[in-house]
Length: 313
Image 1 (cartoon, rainbow, N blue to C red):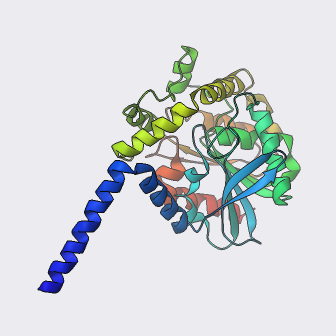
Image 2 (cartoon, rainbow, N blue to C red):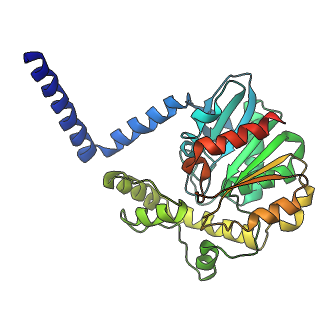
Image 3 (spheres, helix red, strand yellow):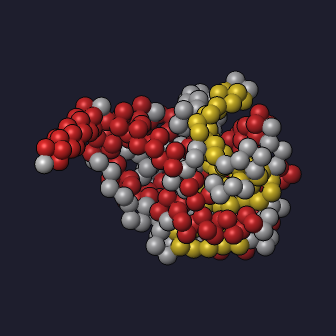
C-alpha cells in the first residue's frame, strides 16, 4: 500500500512539473516534443555550408540510400516532414528535409531574393554542397513550386519528383486563397495567438488542436519575421499567377507523382488535372479526407502511395 502511495505521489509531482513547464517554459516543452517526434522518425539535425549560408536540415535513413529531398511549404520548416518520416525511413531512402532560405533556422534576411527560380538554384547549390548528384525530390505547396521549377531548370539532377498540393500552376477553379490574394489580403498572415486556430483550419481539413501556449509560440515566431514572410508570400503569389508554369509542364522529364487533398482551400484540386494533362506520364492520387498538407493529415496513406511510386523509379 505504501509503495502505491509513493508511486502516485511521484506521478502527481511529475504532472505538476509538466503543467509548470507548459505554463512558464512552453518553448522548452515544445522543443522537447519536437525532438521526440524527430527521434520517432529517426531524424538527426545537421547543417551544411552552402556559399555564405549555413543550411540546417534533418536527415534519416542509411547514408548510402537513394537521396529523397523533401521541401516544406510557406511558413513551414524542416519539421513539417517529421511526422511523415517514420513512414518513409524504411531502409532504402536517405531522407533529407532542409529549411529553405527565408524559413526555420536558415537565413531570414528581407534584403535577399526569394522568388521560385532563385530558391530552386539554391536547392541545386545545397545538393552540390551535400555531394548529391541525383535525387528524388518532393515538395509541399511552395516547396512543390520550388521542386517543379527545379525539375524544369535542372532535369539532369532528378530521379523522380513528387508534388504535394504544389503551387505554381493555375487550375480551372479559384481557391479561397486566390480570392483573398486578388482582394489584396494575405490569408496566411497571423494576427494573434488565437488567429492560429483560423489559419490551421484554413490549411488542414480536420486540423489538430494546438494548445494555447503553443499557439502563442507560433504567433511570436510569425510576428518576428512578419515583413519577410509578407514579402515571400506576395513573391509566391506573383510567381504562381503572372509566371505560372502551366505552359511549361510538357518540359518536365522526371517521373512525377501528384498527391492532393480534396478539400484544399489554398490551391484548388482542379490543379491536379492541369498537372496530369501537362506532365508526360504523370501519376496522381487525391485523398478525399484531407486538405493542403496530406503528408501531415494522412501520413500513412500518403507514404504508402509515395513509396509505391518511388519503388518504380
